[in-house]
Length: 617
Image 1: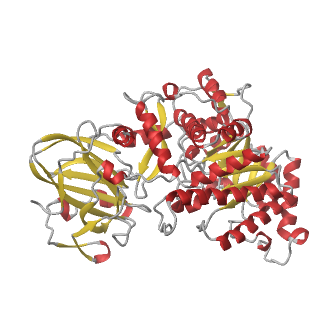
Image 2: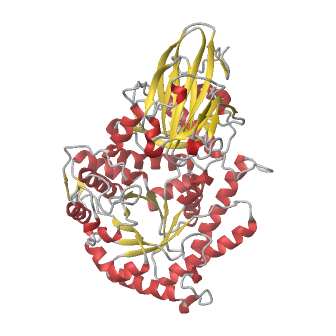
Image 3: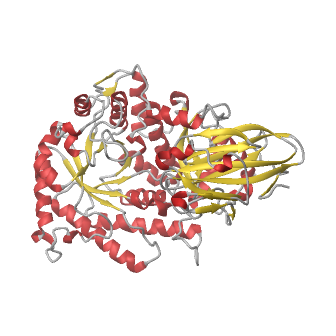
């Protein structure tokens, strides 16, 4: 019964809006989440003590030279970088002399000096370590080495006089999905994998507390219902068992540039909602008493790091910064890699953008909050992790979403709508129940239940320089000839070939099919046969931009970067009796590339009397 309810829930919450080629709800939502709400007032809020602001991207030399200047610019703490890059690092080798350990180590001497300066400025220091290389959760020898390194990191931080440790687990994100190529499930199940991840994560934190029991512990970024979420879950549970005084502080990156205050507040709500659902009662109590959200902002630079100045408009900076300050009871943080000089007020001539860089710097130093009573009251509740339904106040609600190619579940904010008005909605409850089943490692046959189409004729790759391929009319758009040969990327001769995607995955993954697989386009073609004319819904998600033709008619034109989210776009369509061709074009920039497609009835149930084939009958 649950799976039947979930099928209906999927059809509604995996993107909620019927779309047309000229209006795309997904893109409108994305832009809305980034755009500041006009008309808000800014200033001081006595009822909300300001958190300490942590700066990401400072090495020891930078701190030694500029800690005092950073303090003037509103920086109260540092994630200390470039000391121990990642879990495999020998921290005593950072000075180039692995035989110097302890007091004779030059890096430790420098770290002690930096920490002393910061204490004099009422600033804090946190040793930052990353997960850069993937981990074999079942390799005991690897974990003996890794755990020893974590012990040495902690000894270093304690002896340096740092206030705590920050673990950044982002850079092995590919390992946080169940279908990662490194998981062969030979002799273990998904549930066993989950248990092993939590076991390894628990031991890491035990080691940290053995050496530094009163440390302040921070971690980032959010992992939601992916396998990385089990690392965070295990850490909070262990901190709760030890009643660790420093707490765990959860540093967010969604808040980097989704500066709309509804979405900023909604995201913090979604984090609390997630932890309430996955933590034990003891750990949830500890979370509320000693832990916090540490909301992050990325004010300068562009995604490609080529912009040496404001990366968001001033209105977004003001609202995003204010939100991080209001929502973070202990710490907020600023991501400043590659723009340290500009953020401290130097080399401003390198900025070639149109924003007033001095106005941005002044706002960062002033740290104003939104003073409107509504937002102050909501911030107090969210700081305290009060479990309430904020959907009416914010207009958004946190829901799990199924995303290809790994069929991993992301908890994201979506607009409320009829049938999904609040947290009492059946769709909301079903979605969370389903998401938690996947999170726990239970086997769910999504492909069979959702009836996504994964057998296609495919053709590619065609060139997509600067994403120009999206608007380029390649031969399949002018007519289908399954026997023809075409010129593809780099002059290679390409032709249609059958792709039968085996396994349980609901989406089609182009990455292993085509080479090259970045800045390219490809097509997928199949035929659907209906016993009669009927009203249906075409449901599709593409990564990145995509177009959909059915019966030669263009019914979706989606030019934006995106992920292959199930049912991202829903297009009502009158399917004629007989056989109709379906053609999909997907253009990729970088990383994942593919799509997910299915046809349902108007209520969202899979249309089970349709027949799909690779040839026209």
